[in-house]
Image (cartoon, rainbow, N blue to C red; front, side):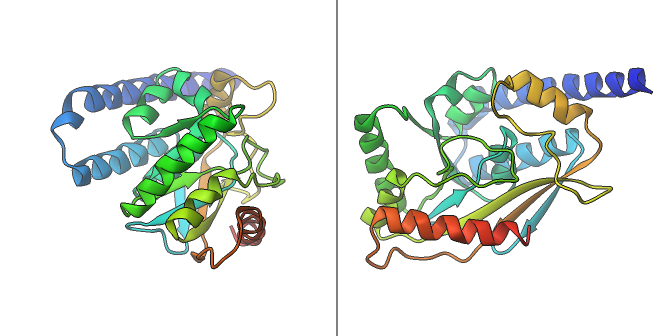
Length: 249
């Protein structure tokens, strides 16, 4: 049984690698000729196929945005979070600079228009907040993971406030988003996709591939405008909204 499980995981890994390679080919050769709408449709289709290859069902609750301006603020569990969000709605991500150097995934994130921020540099954070505000003023959907790092999905870490300044500067709504991975058969929370602590990206991917069928549940809350709140208050209120959504995810 274990040998069969390993063989199936290895087959999934091969298919995953081929799919990522096709994605890299698309962004290198096809994207330069595509319109913005074609790119959005292509990214969503690619993400849905990737989830299928991983035997992950996508369950969307609430109303996902179809256009901006809106700043999505989600809890952060796994490298899969970005794939789940890409499969759910058009959006650009704000991610830590390290993601750009992840094998294959970083190249795809870069091609999808991700804004990379060096967390240890206040000056770089100011630069990215300015870019985010400009994007929101241009009616974009942007996604942040304000915990600043991944958690196990059971606990919610405190939200950092810096990036919320972009929504305040652009007077754009913030929409809370709750993510959770669960075992399809039992409905219980699955820790297989987690990418925390000493985990390597490959370990997290292999654990996901070896797991029984999973469901990725994404729950969109109600957008809320800043309405005079400072960034710390807005971050705290958004964290509370995400925590409430997680009880229904």
